[in-house]
Length: 133
Image (cartoon, rainbow, N blue to C red; front, side, top):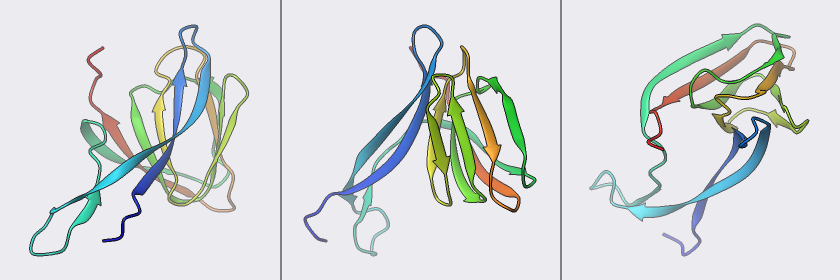
């Protein structure tokens, strides 16, 4: 393996202490691990504890335009279509194939979402375990 550290990039959508939603670009280092011997090492990073996973499909042009918080902390991975997510602070994130969004604005003003491609959208969602804060 090369000496370059591989990174996993994702966007976080969260609510601050007054309920305003914001985006934050984050990344994690993936470290070499003997994950599936005898196959060679892979780079891995533990992420977040999960409880279940879902397929989320929406028709082309779908819009959740009324701002809303997410019902549970989730990770969205875009598999088809394109989405525009707007935080309550006015920030926007354009999500395309393969993009990962960590959604944590479970209270406050929330966000709105629109499917903006010419076809339907498909998201793989991972519901996160409750945080112990």
